[in-house]
Image 1 (cartoon, rainbow, N blue to C red):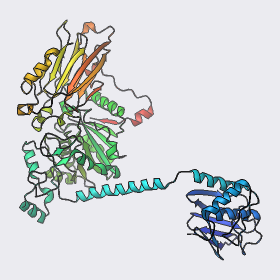
Image 2 (image 1 turned 60 degrees about the horizontal axis):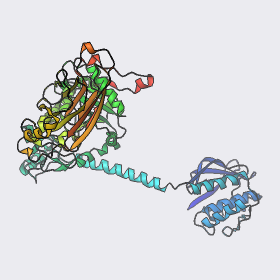
Image 3 (image 1 turned 45 degrees about the vertical axis):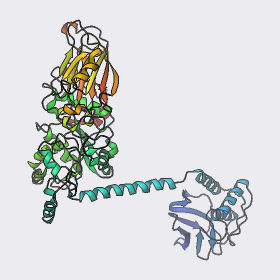
Image 4 (image 1 turned 120 degrees about the vertical axis):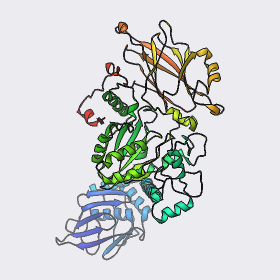
Amino acid sequence: MLEVTTMLSTTGTHCLRACDMNMNVAVNSTSNSLQVVSGSMLMDGFKVGGVFGDKLGLLKDARWPGVSSRTRSCAAVMRGRCSGRVEDEKVGFGGGVGGSRDSSKQVRAALREGGEVEDSGIDDVESKVTGKSRGEIFLERAMLAHESAPSRGAEVVVAKKERKKKREKLASFVARRDEPCCYGCGAVLQSSDVEAPGFLPLATFEVKKKHHQLKTVLCGRCVLLSQGAMIPAVSGNGGYGEGKGFISADELRAQLTHLKYEKALIVKLVDIVDFNGSFLTRVRDLVGSNPIILVVTKIDLLPKGTDMAAVGDWVIRATLAKKLNVISVHLTSAKAVTGISGFSALMQRQRQGRDVYVLGSANVGKSAFISSLLRDLGERDPIAAAAQRFRPIQSAMPGTTLGPIQIDAFSGGGSLYDTPGVHLHHRMAAAVSPEDLPLLAPRKRLTGRLIAAPSSISLVGQSLFWGGIVRIDVLEAPENVALTFFGPNSIPVIGTLTSQADLLYEKELGGKLFPPGGERVKSWPGLANHQDVRFVIDSHKRPAGDLTISGLGWITVGLVYNEEEETGYVNHVVRLRIHTPKAVETFMRPSMPVGSNATEWYEYMEVEDDESEATRPTLVY
């Protein structure tokens, strides 16, 4: 029920206050005009604001003698729109006697036809329409526009659902954060399943709980992982191995969805050896509009003589090509403690009291990075120094971290979070057995293994096996083509004629061609994926590009450099056929400038204008 009350102002003007219409109006008793003093009026969801027009009357009763017929016509419009009845001091609209929407339609029809409107709802108001004023035309158009406008009800429902979803996500995260968890992997502590993550003997659990020490214990799985055991726990799309799955990859990813509703600083980690496979292109779906710092890990594995400035420029170019805006790019190594101090200083400036979440794909090096970061922070912050006693567990087993691990690392408030890795089904780690996973992780500095044919002999018709997990057939190439393999040195590269490749694979799988190895050969599904790729070599020095195998490494396609052939036109086509396990993806990209000779051919990205310079991330290494 919308109530309009009349008052007498100090200027002799009758004022009406529409309590539920978000407006104040004033009726001048001498000019019979109505003006909106402040605010606006909502009529069934349509907003009307400003001055209604010249001599737009409202009502006529015993208090307001001499009201014109034009005023009465507008009163009829108002009455027909809202319906109601007139009382001595109060006018009620909505659900009163007579009218309602039927009379409203009658009024509008009469206005369009210039006819008369019969009023049976308000005895004291005459609704005879004598003509159209500017105010009447405005109201008529407003009503018609309102009827044709879509309802806002659906938008309100969607907004309410979003707010409810936000509250549920934050509530579930807070509830889980309050549960006692293993500080090594983040799994909730339990005493019912010995094989499951988070297991703690009941007696130990009760003693630690009694003394408030549950945050200082490792679960049984973390103890074994710290001793070198490979215990898979993640199942489903992106899971690892055939072991018992205690949590799915989708459930781990769901633990990160609350981030888009929080104000936090996001640290996104990328493995330089598997840049494309570990990049997490759709990270904005998880973190929303929160600021992101990009950290590239394991740069100590790049070939000797690599120019880090060129690599950093290449990373920035690739990041901008993926349409991801980041504050800065940091080249780091947790093992060599390179780039950690520079990141720590910038993080402290950008944090501004917010929590810091470290995100990345599985096995990208998040726990090792956090350990190095805590050591650096601990040199200046006693809180961070104390937090080093309970650092997350580091393991070669993807899926080590199974829940967010809260670390009190800042004296000024806020926490540092190690998060579960995002498990990607297209990486090689999802295709091999847990026992073979350590072979995929390079232990030493990469050395490019150059494969080229002897003089006057072509690689066309040859097949190259990268262990038992990748096969490359050379379909078309110049005589001096060169394929350089960058990846784990423990996995061999063996060549043979394409006509004999199937026979060699069947005979040597598990022997010379590993992984897989041992009894795991029997359950190996083979190389089900086949993809043809094409490169064009247009320079004697600059490679045509890289062919990356997700979760393994990359192959640089170029020419064997010869100073005598340095000049002259070059336009060679190289066609390769790649065989990989099912679901493992391959990518083509511009060549990463690694090695001592990369500076001879790499061209730095040009900045076109000041705006491009402003949006370009800062490089720190």
